[in-house]
Image (cartoon, rainbow, N blue to C red):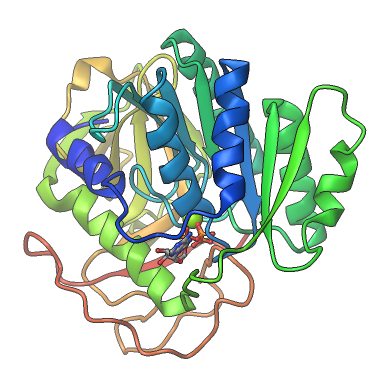
Amino acid sequence: MPSEDTTGKMIRDSMAVQEGISVPPEWETIVSLLRDRGSGVVYVLGAADRGKTTFCRWLVARLASLKITGFLDCDIGQSTLGPPATVGLALFRDTSGEPLATYFRFVGAVTPSGHMVQELVGALRLKEKAREGGASFLVIDSPGWVLEPAAQEFHVRMIDLLQPDLVVGFERGPELEGILVNFRRHPRMTLLECNCPPKVVERKRDWRRLYRHQRFLEYFSGAVPQARFLSGLGIHGRMPESFREESWRDLLIALCDPEMMVVTLGLVDRLDLVTGTISFRAPPHDPHRVATVHVGSLQVDLSHPPGRDKNGTRPLSSRQSTLPGEDDPVPPARVSPSSGARGDRERSFPE
Ligand SMILES: Nc1ncnc2c1ncn2[C@@H]1O[C@H](COP(=O)(O)OP(=O)(O)OP(=O)(O)O)[C@@H](O)[C@H]1O
Ligand SMILES: [Mg+2]
């Protein structure tokens, strides 16, 4: 990822020590179990607002004080490590929150629905990176999209692919059974079901959209206009159906290295077919590392409030939410955009 400062700061802020959280006794049991094993991959599963990320951050800090520990953030909507629409890996060797190394893969959307292949491949590649980086422990945070049949299939495939040693489910009632039942007889997997901690705070849809918007604002805070000839580069992903300017403007893209790790994300200004040039805004990065351009499904307009078009109404067909039922009409908290960005409208091509 580019601008180590921005990405590094996003990670340090996200991994700061959490004051005042409640730590149920079963969390300590999980640490003991992993300490005794000496290594292990943990997949954390649960619906929205079940305390998954809080637990992951706590667990990563505890394990990192023992051995190198990776945090694999697969929640592309409510990302913890980097910008939304990416799967991220950070390796830690102590509790400072300062990563040893970070890697990102681009999914191109803020929900796995319609982008499962990109997410599955990205997660697996980053798991391999964690192993190459010497991580003894790997903690995987997953999207809160768990209730629909497609969501259940997604998690079943993630677990099947990533082969965790431990699956920790956070739930209210038996809401994860449709996923967990598939692994109850797995010979090498332990399933642990935890009650959702009572202190968990529920976040409404507008809060989630603003959170995403702020993450994009922060990521692109140091972005500068740039242009690249496409000749010699791979280009793939969700191409818009038309070459009209409005189909490409603000489209989220990733410039990736030969291993398809993200070098930088960008927001398209213009695609010029005559000169074969793509113009975009992106944080400063090393252009020599770029081998491919991955086109995402999301247009991110940093200059308009989230979910509103220029007239202040919500675009319906183009809206993309992380979770079904994010529709609660709660007034958004006030945001103070960093570095001169004005607001955000987020839309995508219908899945
Ligand atoms: N054990 C805990 N003690 C105190 N507060 C908690 C605890 N777990 C979660 N919370 C609070 O509840 C809120 C939601 O928690 P968290 O972000 O961990 O949930 P999540 O399941 O990851 O949600 P999402 O679906 O958005 O990813 C946060 O504000 C967090 O601070
Ligand atoms: Mg979370």
